[in-house]
Length: 268
Ligand SMILES: [Mg+2]
Image 1 (cartoon, rainbow, N blue to C red):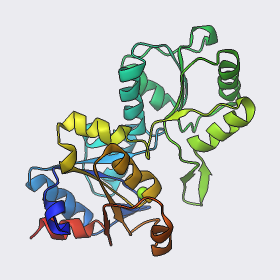
Image 2 (cartoon, rainbow, N blue to C red; image 1 turned 90 degrees about the vertical axis):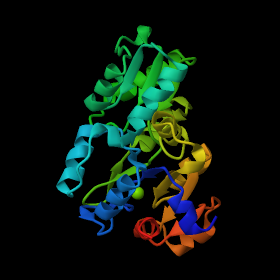
Image 3 (cartoon, rainbow, N blue to C red; image 1 turned 90 degrees about the horizontal axis):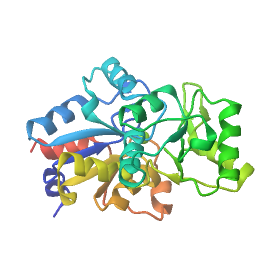
């Protein structure tokens, strides 16, 4: 199958957002027509994000500001994938959540009991916590040391999160602090883990051969697709340059200048 045929055979597009559909607060010119073209074909798209500090509603508002209307159902987040993992592996367990109120709300909505009574905790969840306190670091360190058999799960591996001035520490950096204190590393849910693509394919009942991830980072976006056994498409409109692409151990199934090339293929 050539590039155009492959793109035209897709029934589900999982889009990374920043660097793929927009850059910072600037929407790419092809984004709106691309999303419309996918819908017009009867195919589906989802926006896929590792961020577990913003609830889906925050993303709906951000896209609205950029001129794209969306609903909760258009998103797949590391918080949702965490709930998916928990349903499969730790159903009904009492969770200690070191995360934002929006992550806690999401897990409560999924039916998980949350507790801060350390003796009652049955699993530890660490998110990108913009409401982080030393007490949470203390509690997590205590739990991992005193109750070493507890499952320990982090929503995403990112070390830093972009801001308008540069970066702030993200969930992955907090896992490093905790490792320094306890020697423990978590099971990590977000990209490059295959869980978000797997959840998406299952939720929308699409064959893996008809689903793809589209993103600007090989080591997170593309790799999550490759790990899940679906097509991994790299776009060169964000973080990756030719040098990074050449030296990457992971090879995308397809490399595009930008997601506008998908629009061109679908418009033929
Ligand atoms: Mg990106």
